Image (tube, rainbow, N blue to C red; front, side):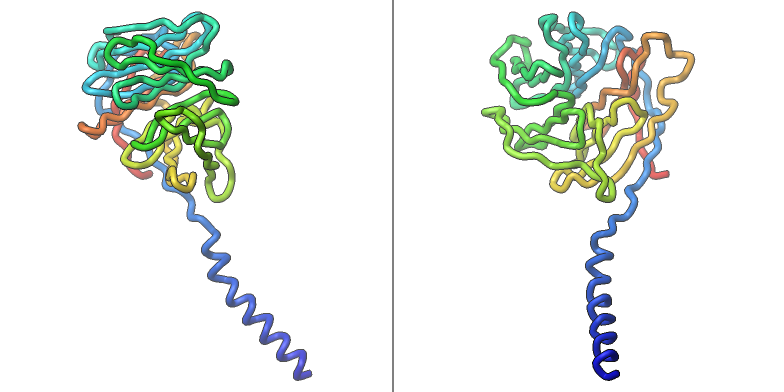
Length: 260
């Protein structure tokens, strides 16, 4: 009897000791954010937006589709294309980011990326990577690339070689179809392809810290048979402005976010 009692006490002690550890593993549900439209701007409805960034007062955009892919400099206020370089028809252009006076653009399934001069769009070099290329951004020290899975890859910005990876999860479950990427106040914002959702990610851990619901952003009256999905996130760090658009959308939106 004494041994049974001691065994029960020991079991209770072990379970009690494990409770804090179990609690530590349970992640709270990420916050959910909704948007408010601050300004609406024109956007080229023929632009199949894959990558979007804001640098020194203008937008730079990577558009996709074989035979229609391009690199563009765009005036925010009017949607006017100020500068354009077409990409060879064999490539389906994808994500875009700026790095120290250059523009880095990746392609979808051809395992090739391009580096251009920011001012002239003159090609400086190409580079290769494995797998598919979807979205691209940087955190000030590394380039960060998505490939349509739950994985974010880190690239050396000088050699463009892969240096590491992190899996994006929400309460332990992988979040797949990560597409367009943008760094916003230290977090990575990632469009979830085929949805009206953008996830906010802690890049050090891959943990999702929030979901942004962009349902209804483009009014039904502005949609045509060619209108495609939400895709395109740009952040003006100096002005603290967030811009969002979609593939072949006629409008681009400046939005503010608040918790639901």
